Amino acid sequence: MFTTGQLWFAGFFVVVFVAAMIYVYRKDINLHKKYYKGAYKVLLAFLGFIVLLFFIKIYLKE
Figure (cartoon, rainbow, N blue to C red):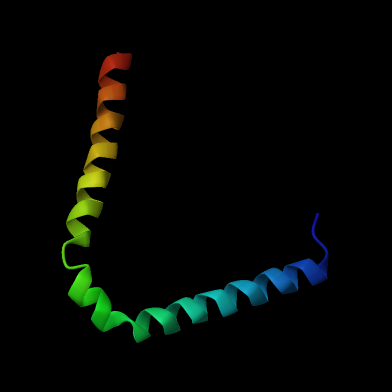
């Protein structure tokens, strides 16, 4: 399906991309703490909404 060159490139790309993301996040960690204090609340609300939709789907299916 994939050649060995494509697999090597994909592996190399993933490693470099993850390393770059870690570097950038560590560099901006103080800004994240300052400007995105309540971001986890928004994430939890969004996930709760998705779970609520899932339960409504199951309830109405029966």
